[in-house]
Length: 374
Image 1 (cartoon, rainbow, N blue to C red):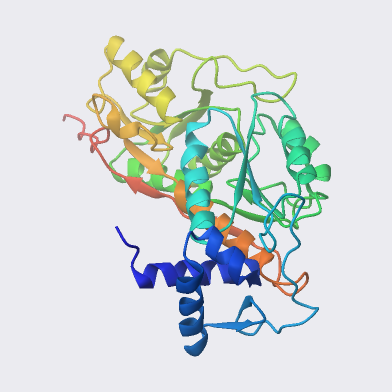
Image 2 (spheres, one colour):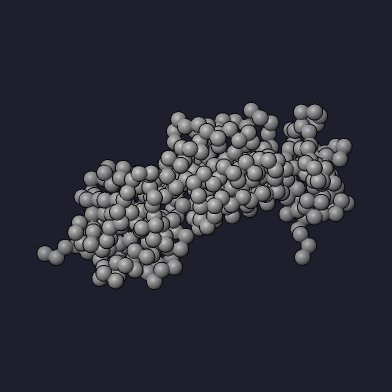
């Protein structure tokens, strides 16, 4: 099927605005368009004032020709004028970040940017060798979502990651304020707001005794735990709350610390809990099964809100869930990186620490608490 003219020209503009300057011959090859068609499109776009052309090179409007706006140099073995790739570094087997990766990849491909994907193994410090390998290969920018299983492991990466030497955007990660990474672009979910949605939903249904069963092996998990304690303490309607580990493999938490995994059914009965927030989805589905085996039915005996919404809707009881905007995080991070790459250093404005708000998907695992019998 022939590509519509409008779509092809949008792709041309996306590449030109991402790169700053591109040779017409390289652009035709990259977009798999004939040189004749590409030149005709460029002429029409230039006539409409949407880009500038001259001497075999196209540039964004306002990007003056000359030494200050060179075509990116090709590495050995690359076609002349072809820009270096953008590195995407993500942890292996991380379902939560898969959609973030997909969102970033889609935005980069739409802009015509080449991608070098690096998968970091499940080991402490695994991201650094991947980043060093990408830099040695000549990437021009970095999108990264480190695993950071503990706060100590996170701190250990701050100094070197702040000095990589290419434009960098952190995805779904918010470094400690005042750290070396405070002045690095970040795009992430507002997990405080996500927990606010969960607690507010349960409280609105009459639940006053709550528990958070959560992981403790990622920045998201640590943010969720802190937010739940903050919000539950501040809500006068909440009579009792607690935070526990969701499963034996949901740690390790901090080095030297140890956190027991309670019997959730026994905890609910002991503390009279009627509302639970469970992080993440797979742990939530497993915990709901265990509650049923112990005679606690969801939502009749306990309302449940999952956090992640990757597979929460697939349980025998579809779980109400907080859904962070995972794909949108990746897309926004990629667009921010492309903005940095398209402008000379120092002209792209201040560092951005962007947060996108999660949403609440209400399903069958929550219900209003019945009024007590007289």
